[in-house]
Length: 353
Image (tube, rainbow, N blue to C red; front, side, top):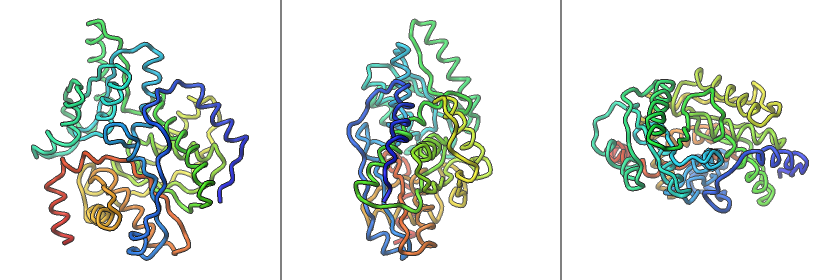
């Protein structure tokens, strides 16, 4: 059982209260035991935190992050939000939905990170929802240039400002105030209470590690609360040797934003990189297996880009640990991406029968 240190909890709540929050969902996302998947793997007990159920426009982890980004946008009296991301980005889809909720316009810049001309990838899934939600779409031809993508957003913001708009940019690259990470410090507070309610300790927590916002925020929040459970970040965007310093930098940025010392040490940053290949947005044998097993044993829907790879990491960890250990997997959403990857998923189904 994880007992609550009330002083640490109050300090954490106080640190978060410094920053405005636009409420975009109600209630906690549930913790669920995955008994059939656990039995199939024959190792550690698997549980899931259902952050795919954050209610807004198919949900996902970005809803938590956007509460604090749009809190800032409202505090600055912005009327237009700008964001950049991959063609099938869940973040940009949810930014469009969140902007609608608070009465702002949204401009989305789609970066071409995945080398495919599949019409489903470019027109279905999140892209279709972006259009349905009324966002204005722009395109950036490079997929691995975070600073360039942010610079293009800044140029667009100037154009919109010249037309009388009050803009707020959600940046992609590190080096900016990481307001989104505060959403996962809030999630750590939520988890602390849930651990106590179900009287269950977890030996490891597994989460996808891409931009680093969710991973760093959750890790920072747990350590602020005195919870030392290892947090394993499974690479979904870049190699482990690049992701590790990114998470360290994010944690330092969070400490600066909150005005406190970082509780995260070098030993706390644990990165698992073996499930990334052949690269961002491209599935592999392990992620295909994770996608099939989760669906057929637990009716848990994963997407090929993010959650299938992070679940592949959780599965691999479960298989190598004894049955008396417990793993909590953070399901970060991404369901609409399934429809953009129809052909890949059909191949995964065929190969796995």
